[in-house]
Amino acid sequence: MAILPVLRLGDPLLLQKASRVSEFDNPDLDNLIEDMFETMAAEEGVGLAAPQVGASLRIVIFGFEHNPRYPDSNGIPQTILINPEITPLSDEMENGWEGCLSVPGMRGLVSRHRHIRYTGFDPSGQPIEEEAEGFHARVVQHECDHLDGIIYTHRLCHPLKFGFTDELLQSGQLNSTDCL
Ligand code: NI
Image 1 (tube, rainbow, N blue to C red):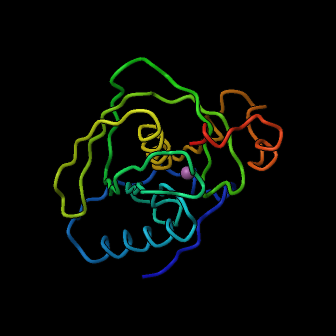
Image 2 (tube, protein in one colour):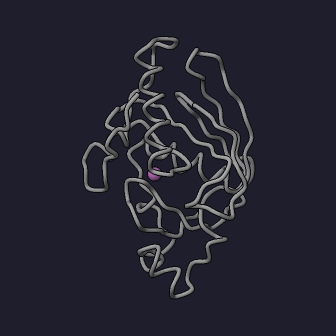
């Protein structure tokens, strides 16, 4: 187990399209996922995508019970999702403030589908199919974007709706209750 360095905005690896995982149920995959969970916990993230730790593979993890960076959010079940696909289940979009471990200390306002279905595989190759709404749906969309080289800053609702978390909170533009 190891805490891995998280790549930051500006690193070209974050802009690459990640490759599909073709071999399941193997120790290399399990070790990478273990390291991703350890890294996510150390950084107090609610989600992490493999490209953020320099592994250009279609793997995301997310989930938490309680998180100090998102004190008002309900928990999300801990999930490992490999080769994910997302299908919106309605046209309804929702704006919310997002942060990212690759863009430390900052938040931006992003529009996401409110209600989605996601599919993929667990590390043993078993299929996963779930529905998610609201914050949960937002986290899944944010993490899966990383697999296509998309950072939330590419999707800002408006260039002015972006800044350092502390300043946004102090000026009242951001309530801790409406953070991703
Ligand atoms: Ni991110």
